[in-house]
Length: 480
Image (cartoon, rainbow, N blue to C red; front, side, top):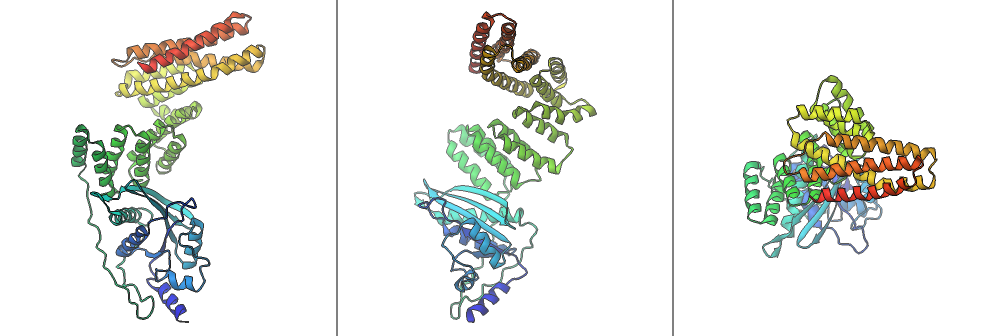
């Protein structure tokens, strides 16, 4: 009876504040590392200090969790639940939010990932990897506190932004004679990043060859001020400059998710995701931008870039046509010219690329982009050509073979014409000339194959030789 009354009192405590269950998850592998409980405790402290959500930490040490679990109302309560179990128990506790996390310690670092669930749906997720050493000594508690503080700041500025902060009340007695010690948490000081100073310090460390120190400085700045777009941009650029485009793209994506009101961060994330061939993720980010700016020209052009990277030139053209119907746009011209080259429209491709060249103020960037896209198209065509040559040798009169050759020849000719309309940048003439040869040889391969289908037996051998020469020219161009 006493336990029931205590449970009732606890569940009515701060009823105006929604509850959040904090649950350290069981390791994915049976013998995997157990999560760090101090993260859960520091999360609870941070939530208590803010007061907008009432934290309940998974386990019998929590004054709300304990009496209800002991009465058997929560079923089997393992030390570390699965995500499904945590969601089930949160429902029984009347907690609309569940914050689950994993953590492990490796090579002197504390690695942790968290996920906020509401109504059975993930509304936020993040991961951290922080140095857990202070000098030569372990400092796991400080690291756990820093991770917890950062996560709660992010949640309060994001998914929990609509909740009203309230002064936390003292925790009620868990059992008679066991009054808990109430600790008044000290809210962390608000940190405003001086981006100019941060950038200068990172540059100084980089010039001195202290790359690890520069990276640690950038990560510390983000951890101290997680909602600073400048700090996050510094980290992204540094990762890219240190030759880690995958990490740069992931940090750029994370910045876009945390700061959705800053479209420039999401645009940067899209470009970086395209560069590492994470095209599905890039497409998802474009959709996020489109949801906020459905008719924006910049979003349409970004969607066209993703479509081109996905080798979907028809979609790219559809995205660009409405822009160019309203008036000239050099960037849209460039993209449509490349899409037309992919589809085999030589005249349209050349017209668009010449119009772009005569009006653009970003010729260097445009040339490098066009060079990369046309080169990738040529390489894909070269990789697909041996199969077509084989089918032609086996079934020279098949209609499907002739149709495929028609398409391949049109596309090879349009790529060569588009490439010929580009003016190389200074210092890139030799590489440009090698690609010119490669494009011409691909056109010649298609012409040789057509001659073979017309009855010239030796033309098939010529096609194979020309294809080999084209691939060598591509390799030579990339090496220059």
